Amino acid sequence: MVAFSGVAMANNNEVAKLKISVKNEMLLVKATPCQDMAIDIYEYVVDTYNCGEDDIDLLNALMSNC
Image 1 (spheres, rainbow, N blue to C red):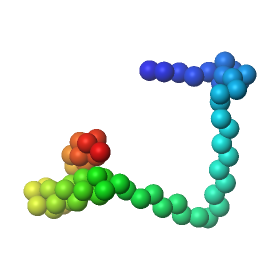
Image 2: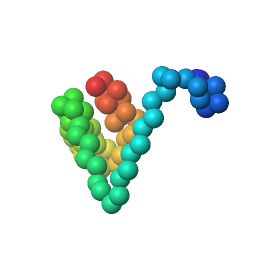
Image 3: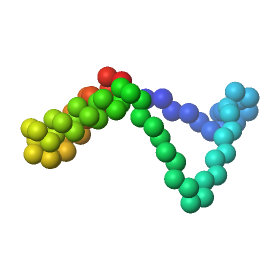
């Protein structure tokens, strides 16, 4: 476990400040080709063998390969 103290890092010049302002906008995040394939495999397995029940462990295992 790694913990960072805001007070300890306050004078550190390497800390980047990032401001993001989003108002009523949808952000689209595109999957990589590997992630697309992992999702396709997951959906096939869930639809074929799990009768439509989610299997988050399987999804995580497939995505961890990407």
